[in-house]
Amino acid sequence: MKTMISIVLPVYNRFSGLGNGIRELKAVLDERICVYEIIIVDDGSVNKDQIKAIADLHSCNYLRNDRNAGKGMAVKKGILASTGELIIFMDGDFPFHLDVINRMIDALQHHLIVIGDRTLPGSRYAKETVIMRKAGSRILSLLISRFYVKGITDSQCGIKGFREKTGKAIFNKLTQSGFSFDVELLFVARKNRIDIKRLPVHVVEQEGSSVNVFKDGFVMLFSLFSILFNQAQGKYRINE
Image 1 (cartoon, rainbow, N blue to C red):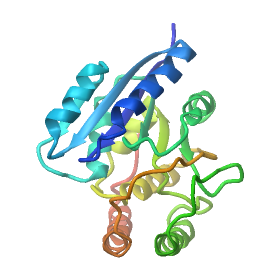
Image 2 (image 1 turned 90 degrees about the horizontal axis):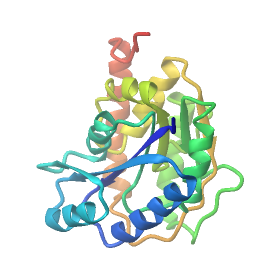
Image 3 (image 1 turned 120 degrees about the horizontal axis):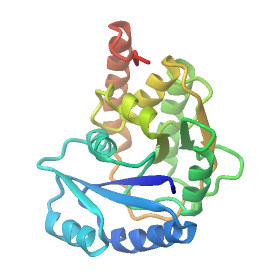
Image 4 (image 1 turned 60 degrees about the vertical axis):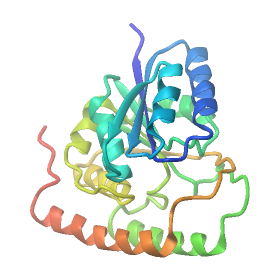
């Protein structure tokens, strides 16, 4: 029996490349000759009808938050609704070359969690990252890799994969609704001694990002403190 694969795509407002991205993703999965589902999670977009139409056109499952709840909540909704034995989530604007999908599926045969890491040798960028964004990201990465998930220098890379039982157990523990959910899920994995495999990725050129370095960075700092508070209260323990 073929392994069922679930791909979760969180989407918020931006959808211009969604249709083309799904076509390319389906081509990769079809070439692999696997059973799969693609879940689009619309996080309260204003253009919901257009996103729903794209989902229907490409036979994707469509889930929606009535209001913008944050990327963390959108991904969590998709992960918990998935039916695959292997689950991968990736930003709905398709920021990576899709060869990573096959490499991630292969790696999940041997590891419980597999994540993209833009700092690994072999990773490539389409163009230089804006200086201020790169500086802000580097500061946060140093803080996170030093005190939260040691040895992982790119917690925010927007593609991560899990075996079903592990992924759902972790996401059932998550509390962060925004960008800090990536840190929280890796933190939970580490606290429960779950192995994490990192893969290099090829970043493709994107339209302007919705991330605000200062605003989102401040919110993440506050969220990081709440993760430590949750840990002190024993909220992240996964029962075997």
